[in-house]
Structures are given as C-alpha cells and as structure tokens.
Image (cartoon, rainbow, N blue to C red):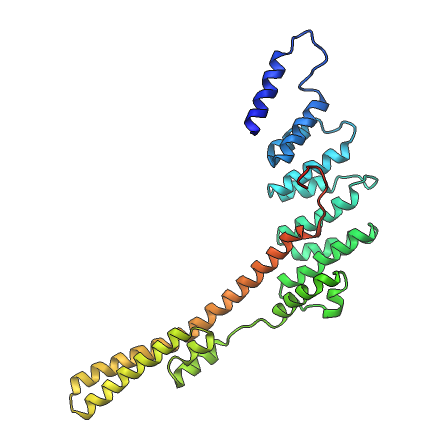
Length: 288
C-alpha cells in the first residue's frame, strides 16, 4: 500500500506541466505532508529525513519534536536527546520533550542519568509531567542495586489502580524468591534429590533419590554376597550419582535465581512498554 501511494505521488508530480505553478512537490507544505505520511506509516528514518529538509520553517518546534520522536523510535537515542533538548522552552512541546528525554535515558538503561536529569530539569515543568517523570524516577530503582525508597514514598506518584501491581514489583525486588544454592547442596548431601525438590525440580529430585538409592543398595547387597568387583562398580556408580546430585542441586538453585531475575526484568519492562513508559501519545496519527 505504501509503495502504491508513493508511485501515485510520483506519477502525479511528473504529470504536472512545467508551466503549472500550482503544484510543487518540493514545497515545504508537500514535503511535510509526505513526511507525516511516512511518520504514520512508521517509516521513521525516512520521515526524519523529510522533516529535516524543511526544518527552520514556521512550526519549527513541532518539526523538531517529530524529528526527535522519529530518532527515538528507531532507537537512535543520542540524536533523539539532541533534538528533544533543542525544543524551545516557550514551545507547546517543551514539557513533552523534557519527559521524552527522561524516557530516552531510561530506554538507554541510563538509570542514574534518569535520576540526575529528573532532579535537575523537572523542578519548573508542568505538575502533570513532573508526576509522570517521578514514576520513571522511582522505577529506575527497580533496575539497580541501590537501596529502595520506603514503599509509601515509592507509591505516591502512582494511581490507586496501579499501586497493587507496583507494590508486587517493589516486593519482588526487595525480597526476590531466590533459592539458596548452599542449602540446596546440603539438602542433597543429606538426602539425595531433596535439594532438587527444594528448588522446584520435583521430578529430577525423585529420580536422583531413586537412582542413587538403587545403586547404593546394589553395592551393599553385593558386598554382603562377597561379589567384591560388582560391589565396587555399584559403589562407584552410587558415588558418581551422589556427587552429581549434590552439584546438580547447587547448579539448579543458581539457574533458578537467574531465571527469577530474568522474569522480573522482563515483566517490569513489559509493564512499562504497556504504559508507554508514562509518556503520552501525541495524536499525530489516527492510531495514536
């Protein structure tokens, strides 16, 4: 569909007679229409290029803001910040640009930069945007190892319908459901397989208990029957499974903890994406 529209535009532009001065494909107005079309079609790189062709015309702050949005959406964060920061303080998009810079630092995982920028730049902006920025400021603590603020203070900027979910993230960060690798190893050393069960790998734990127990019993039974060679073979097998079970329990606890960290961060990022990192949609396109 996009290719068809572009072709039609080219056909129309070539069909216009040279003496017809009413149509100029390269006029700022037509370039802007084409750039808006590319923007709404999510062709952000080409849209930014087209906007930059007419940068400096009336409505400059809007163009600058949309150029910055284009760079942000193609993850060219440094150019995005550069353009957002050049939006004039008198512009209707100044508050939005300030919030977008905060969001961009967040997307770059620059969480300390988020806090520094918020404290330095959000003092004099609109209360609504300052509150949204405070949410990102608080969220930055959920991605670092710094001590968390008190929960009551942490929840202040969030709406009541958000506070339940935010509290769960806060508690997950403060007291993650880790498993102790030391305890898992000790448990399996005392009762083979119990460390795996403690970690949540119940099936593996039962198998480890049965296999180790069977080999230990066969070793004992063959010693009782004076089948020394077979007895030592089964003893070696039992020791091998026993040692592997202890090591495996320690490793399983470590893997479990890595999985907890991964799931926590993925769920947190998914939540922020769902809420557009607390920056508004700007209504530039119908779907927004």
